[in-house]
Amino acid sequence: MKHYLGIDLGTSSIKVVIVNQNGEIVISSTKSYDVLTSNDGWMEQNPDHWLKSMREALADVIKLNSSIVTEIAAISVTGQMHGIVPVDSSGTPLHHAIIWSDRRNEEELGNLQSLLTLEEWVSITGNRPNISFTLGKILWFKKHKPELYEKTDKFLLPKDFIRSQLTDTFETDYSDASATLMMDLHSMQWSEKIVELSQIDNSKLPEIKPSTACVGFITKKSSAAFGLKEGTPVTCGCGDAQAQALGNGILHSRDWLCTVGTSGQLFVSMDQLAIERSGMLHSLTHADPGKWVLMGATLSAGMSFKWLTESIFGNQPEINDLLDMASMANPGAKKLLFLPYLFGERSPYMDEKAKGTFIGLTNEHTKSEIARAVVEGVLFSLYQSFKLVEKTTAQKCEHLILTGGAAQHDIWAATAANIFNVPVVRSKGRGGGAYGAAMLAAAGSGEFINLDEVSKCWGLNEHKNIYQPSKGLHSKYEKLYHVYSKAYDSLKEVFHSLHDLDFS
Image (tube, rainbow, N blue to C red):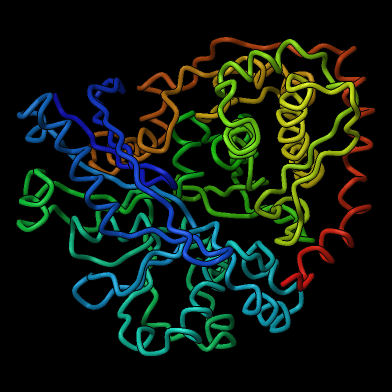
C-alpha cells in the first residue's frame, strides 16, 4: 500500500506522520526544540535544531517500521508562517531563524506604514503591515546585518528551509507567500511595487509555486541524512494555518474553522478573493489551488492558558486540572474579563503594543473564575473575527469546526457554542498540520484528482461530538461581549504609553 509523509514544523516541535491511502495515520512522532530569546522581544530558533529534531522523529518512524519508507509515494511539508531563514547558495543558514513572534522590527514596521497608505497595502496584499509579517524581518536583517544580507542567496520561510534540505531547491508556495506582506494577491507574484519601495533584492526571494506542485525529489545526501528513499517526490507544501484547515476538510465556504493552538485562528475558505478593506482580517491564498482564505487571528490563544498555568500558578494545578476547575465556574466568571494580548494582537486591532489585561478583578474571584475568564477572553477575541467575516462575506455560519491542541477539553467547545451561537463540531478530521501536509503529498502524487477527492476519500467531512448553543447563555454572553468589545479602545492609549515608557 502507498503511504504519504507529512512534516509539520511548529513553534515548539516538529511532527511527522505517515498516512496510508485510506487516510489512516500509521505512524507519527513528535520532537521538541527551544525558542531562543537573547534580547527583549527577540524570538529565534536554530535551524540546525529543527533538522536534528526531524532526524530524530524520522528515526522513530523507521525504528517502528523500517520498510515503510520504501512505500512513501510522496512527501510534503508545512510549518510556522512569517519567519525568515537567510541561506547561502548551498542552503546553509547564515543566521538563526527569526520566527513569527519576534518583535524587533518595530522601527521597520513604522517605516513600512509610511511607504503606502493603509488602503494601498490592503488592496495589494490583502493585509496591513503588522510586526509579525516577514517583510519587516527582512528589512531589519538588511539594516542590522548588511554583510550577511549581501551573502544571502535566498530568504526562506521556515517550512521552505526544511523542504530545501530534502530537495536542494528553493521555492515557496502561494499560501505562505501571501502571509509575507510582499505578494500581490491579484498577480499572484511578488509585488514589484512593494519590493521596489522596500529596496529588497528580488533575486533573494524564492519562486512561488502551487502547494501541490512537485518541486523536487529526495536527494542522495538527504536520503543519507534522514533515512528517506532517494528519488521520493516532494511537493511544495503550505503554511500551517492552511494545513490545519486541510486536515479538518476545510475546502468549501460552508465550513468555518476555529483553531485554538498556541495562537488562534478563525478560518473560512472562499471561492473568490474577499478583502476586509480596513485590513482587520487577513486575506490569504488557500493551499487548495484556486481558492482563498479570509482569516482572523489572535496571537495568544492556548498560549494564554499555558502562561496562566505555568507562569502565574506555577503548574499548581496542571493545565487539564485547571481547565476542570474553569468548567466548575459559572459562565461569565463573575463578570471578569481577560484580554489575551500577551504578544500584542492581530485581528481586529493589528496592534503590536496591546497588552494582556484582566478587567474586573475582585476579592470574590478564585483560580476557577480566572481560568474561565482566560478561556472566554480568547474566544471573545476570535468571536470578533467571526462577526467580521460574517459582515465581509454577507454569509452566516452554519456550524463551526473546533480544532487545535489547546482546545481538546470540553470547556472550549461548549463555551464556543454559547458565545458564537452556532453548533460547534469536532470533526472526524485527523486535524493537525502534519496530516494536512500528508494530504498535499497525496494530491501532488497523482493518485488523487485534487484535494477535494483526498478529503472525501479520507472521510474528513464526517462530524462527531456536536455541541449545541444555549440561547439563554448566548444572550448573557452577548452582554458581556458588548463590554469586552469596548475594552481595547478604552485602554489603547494606556497600552501604548506603557509600551513606549522608558523605565530604565
